[in-house]
Image 1 (tube, rainbow, N blue to C red):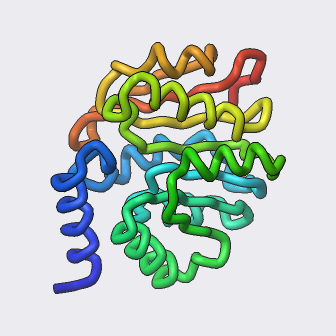
Image 2: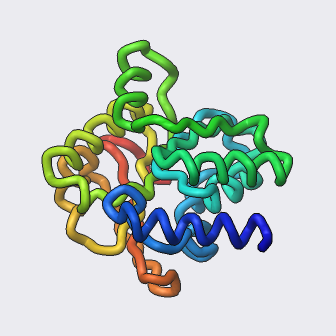
Image 3: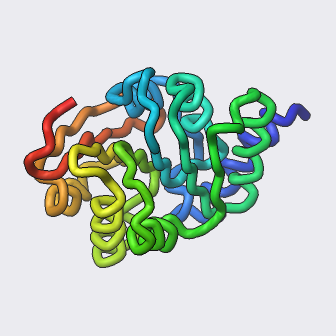
Amino acid sequence: MTHTLKTYLRFIWAGIAKPAQTGGIMPSQRVLIEKMIAPIPATYHGLIIELGAGNGALTRRLARKCPKAKILAFEINPTLARDNRHNLTKAGIDDRVEVITKSAENLLLEMDLKKIKKADFVISGIPLRTLGKKRALSLIDIISKALSENGMYIQFQHSLFDIKKIKEKFPVTRVVPVVLNFPPAVIYYAKKAGGSGR
């Protein structure tokens, strides 16, 4: 069995075993990935944070698109994080990506406390609905603090249930359906009040 197939099966198993953590049983398809990273210029050379990176389908595409960017990819599942690192190394693009196997919430708070440079983009596949209202609002607040003033929060979900939560911190939010993904998804392109559109 090839490593690619094993990686794919491990993602499916993680989705079945821990659906609240993984958010799905299939990695994001290319059409969803392309729409998620579309607002990020290929010439961007700052910091991008990816939350819920899984086995790295989006991570790899993002690293290829933005060769000058620094990417911090958070994945709490150690098996998926290991697959992500392996796939990045195999693709020869692991020098600009750091895969972190810890809670995104704790590390983003730590970055804020230490005044570490803020990101211009936070991309998330974390399933907000499974977190519960209080924890979801807390995560969205932390993401807001991790972003630069004109930064963009890009979140995909499989429903519109969480749009009110996102708009509490990001009043400028555009919703884009991705019906060709399986299962169909929506992407939120969210910015703080006063942030200019991209």
